[in-house]
Image 1: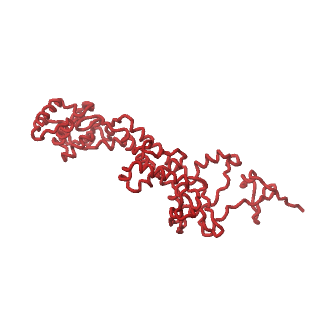
Image 2: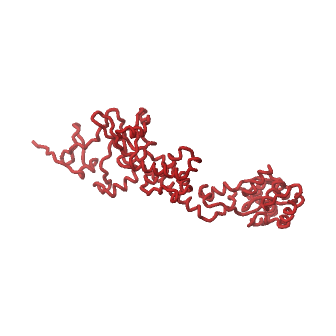
Image 3: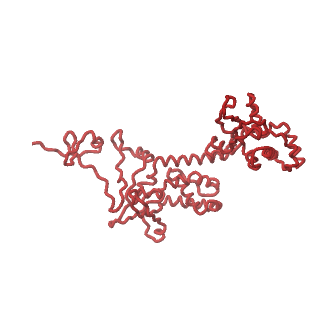
Length: 425
């Protein structure tokens, strides 16, 4: 008669249960050499009525070595994978004695004084199972300090409240929690160090991603639970979004002092007018169809806020489809396709349509004169837009003229015209 010997196993005995063990009908787990393994510890059950969110997490283990992770490895892993929440502490009657911080999520002891209880926030949240849960939110000490910094900065720049309204403190607090969630030092809360432009930049780039990672926006996912340590609930995808926001903020700050960016017209995607195409379009590239300028200068910070050079070009230059005759060229059933610069686009809008009036308006605006239009019209006859010259050359199988370095430099009598208009103005 054989007897079974019960032995105590270590953590290393359990890392390959799927390969070394099998379970009998009685629920006992035995190794292949006959040893009986003790039952695995179970996650504690939540208090009656508390929704389950996946239970507690065990000590982190390595899948490659089978051993426990070092503290350094575990800390690095926590920055990549969010940890499971833990149940809030409660007394013997099941009443919670703490509430999660609305920002970082850690458990904060419930205050006993009247003023402290009045500062608590209460929300009715819908759990993933559809139940309604009354969730209380508190503020821990470090996160209260972030809120205090936001209040100081708004007080130091009164124009912020006038522009953004009463929610500016909340939005600035959301921006500042980005630094806390990424363990970065917060901006100093004084007007001399953090200017209004700096605060506007914080609001622009960090307020939205910061609000998205606060525990208050996700408390419906784990009602009755708290984060095991500050910002443990922040996933790697969220941290990546926070880092992108910080990178955009720094790029915007550097762009404030950078040289202007010269933007050429966007590239056209049309048929070559010399290939016999029935589309009858003449794509004119490289310059403004009216003044012929090849590039316009834009502040580097504006280019950065537009999303880069390509998007800024599409925003600055206006796509056009006009007949050559409307640009002062030879009449033709073909259509000239190209772009106009901001100054000439404004002139066309003021005139109402492309034609002699728009050309006159664009020239006079460039020359910065205010002469009367009807008195100076005799000096503005036979004006041609640069696009008309380019279209005429392309229709003749000739090389189009290069774009102008300065607006309207293709007009030969431009200095004489400026003098005439100044005299008659």
